[in-house]
Length: 79
Length: 79
Image (cartoon, rainbow over all chains, first blue to last red):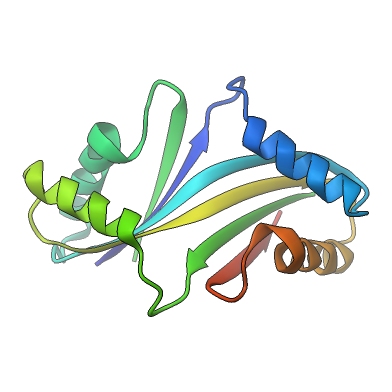
């Protein structure tokens, strides 16, 4: 079973890297870019085949290692 | 219009950061982790409201700045 995890900064948390990308896009001639936020993306291959067990495991991984839940949200997709 | 972009390393490209996470998960007691690949995730807010024009713009952004297409693939979702 494969888990796809998106980790994004919470609203209100400053994202200087996103701002830099927004500035770069602007100076490259891309108009109408109103905002850029950068996050992280992970693909985890699991031996587990039960979806609900896998979800519990992946949530624990996110809480303990993959995301910093003080400033980040995460979203899990299993397939 | 909001574009969600996932940038992942192509198959065969080494991912030491992913390997490190895999090792860390193992040493934290998570069994059955067969592989971890780390990628990047971006959310871009665009003034453009036409979906096909937005797609063309975002593809150009990815090719020119956001992804390194020699070693990375990207996937765009518009909403």
